[in-house]
Structures are given as C-alpha cells and as structure tokens.
Length: 297
Image (cartoon, rainbow, N blue to C red; front, top):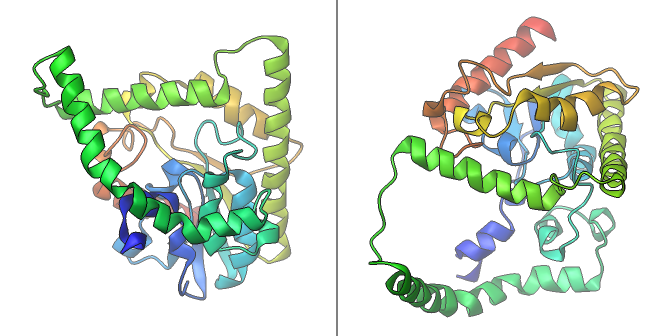
C-alpha cells in the first residue's frame, strides 16, 4: 500500500522505469532531466527506444545510467542526451532524498555520497509516506481552507490554458533563479558557476567516449519549450548556460536545437510550460527518429 502513495511515487519517480526488464537491442536511448522525461514516447510511435530521462537528473547520473545499461542497445544505436537550459548548472543535488530513487537502480558505490543511512532511508521511505498520509489528507486541506477564509472567499478562479502555462513558466523560473543563483552576478558566484559547468561537462565527455567505445551514436537534442516559457527565457539564456559552454568544452558534439522551434513550441503541445503533452511527445519523437535516420544512420 505504502509504495502506491503519491509521496513515494514522486520520490522514486522516473527511476522506477529501470526496475524490471528493459528490452535488449534498443535503437534509441534517451538521457536527460525533466524536459526530456516528457518529450519522448517511443511506444506511441512504434519506435524501438527507451526514455531513460528522470526528473530531475544530473549529467553525472545520465552517465552512470548509460554506463550500466548501454549493453541493452544494439551496435549502431543512438544515445540521445536531451538537456534543459540549466542542465550544466547543477553538478549534484545535495539533499539525500534526491538520491533515494537510485537505490532501486544502482549499487551504493554509484550513488552520490551514499552510505548506510541512504539505504535505510530508501527502505523505510514508503513507511514514512504512509505515516504522513493523514497530514496530507486532512491537515493540509484544513490549513488551505483557513488561508482562503482569511485572505478571501475561498473560491478559486479557473484559468484558461494560456494563463495556466504562463503561471507554470513563472513558477519554473522562480525555482531556477533560486536553485542556480541566476540573479547573483558577483565574481564568486560566476566562478562557482564555471566550476559547476566544468564538472557537468566532464561527464558529458564521458558519455560521448562511452558511446564511441561501444559503437553507439551520440547526439544532443535540445527539446522544445512552450511559447509561454519562451516569454520568460530566451536564446541568450540558452547560449549562456548551455550552448556556449558545450562549444568551448574542447569536444565536438552533434547538436540539434529545438528549444524555440516555431512548430514544436506551440502551446497546444504542452501540459506545462516545459513538459509536452501526449500529442507533442508523439510528434517530437517521430521528428527525432526521422532525423536520426536521415543524418546519422
């Protein structure tokens, strides 16, 4: 019962796709974080691929997953790394709970700063979620009702699709600004950003090398974001935090950029400002498979 709770599912989200049988002979294997996790659906288009992206996920875990599962791919298959704008800005998440999901995938040696406590937490987390259920089910709704009575009549105003995506974009940007210190422009912050990016780039080089050693193709595919998000982010952000560091990394990478693609960035293809809906995923997956066939294979 505890393992079916939303709290637990969120903690183990994404990584649970690795628990069970992953088919052999894969032609496509996707790595990446939040935007990638909802940008591909190979099953919907009949493609022999696996979307291994996890939300959120660092480049170092992208490498560790590929290192463990590249044998599931056939020779000549294609590894797709689909980063978001800020994928190079976070080397590792420091909070232990961000790593619990990988206890179901890796040995302890492959989990960042894992120790005996990490394993214990992973084992008991479903129980913690079960214990927290009364709080989430009763206390939170009561607190929300009290807040509504104090601040207003408690009636929520339904938002149209455009307003919902705009609010999603606003929330994502606020979170990124805090997480990546994007408003901090002093010298120490810029120096730390450069260090973080170099750490991530070191793993990106490892991914490319692992692909070359195992006769696998490697391509960086930047997935689209909605027009609502493009109203907050721009190509300058993409250049500064992702494209330019990759170009200056000393390695040559094949990059396909759909970040602000006129067709795929249409809001009608998105559930949130950065996550594509079923229709968007299906069309985008078809596009990437078609391009791999035309330009790589």
